[in-house]
Length: 353
Image (tube, rainbow, N blue to C red):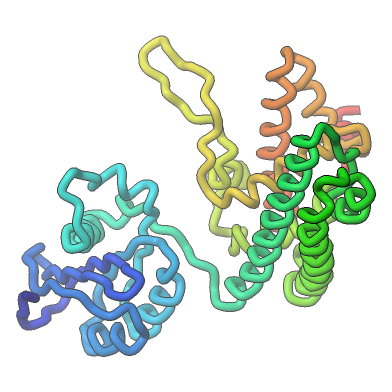
């Protein structure tokens, strides 16, 4: 049963979010528990419980409900800290996990030192709406890829292969290459692929308009070869405020493109990248890096640097070079956006000459 006490100034609240109900723990200024309980994860329920509470520090974990709850609680005067779940689990993970304990741990960490939560920033409402468009397109692309792989696998099982072609034209190219025994099974799948391709194309047009009308800063980023409207808009929406980073070089680490470190004594092995941050933006940057280093990439400082890096080793050097170019590309995009500069492809080379 929830424990009730009078509210006091300087309180800290831990809120463990659930889909239907969320558990909370209220601590006073000295760290004593004032109240524990649960509240419905709805606007009405949260306003009823926390609307009359004096201005407090509220800590919650990032999740599906955290964006709108952060805006709601901030709007009624609370200081809201959205904890990085990946960092947080390393601190209070134990064998006796429960929602009640998670809420208390959140409150105690926020009371002692908010930096322990590694708080993140949510997008504002307008940016969240724009990101929903990008993610809806991403879902359709992933669904189309699964269907294309299904068709290719089915055809291979009959001893045939569908010739290489772009995903956008796959439904047309594959129609004439399906073995006779699969004709009752696959035409419906090809129709769905064709429909998904049309819808993805409409999303691409919508994203183009969105970038031009509401996020004109993306035009600076698109001057870099290999960076289209999708990558530029995803980058702008993910970073949010370019001034949040003291140095552009920090962006690469924020997006998970920095190598891990496991140094101990004289042992300092070369590890893979951290893969923190938005995985789709990281994939888009890597795709752009492949184009920059590929046969159709124009001559730029970034291309020259990446090719020189790839030439230093064997096959694995090319993979490392792609990731390194993606990391340097993220730094370049942030610098262009922050300084509102036009892109100069060979700026460093010309300066050296």
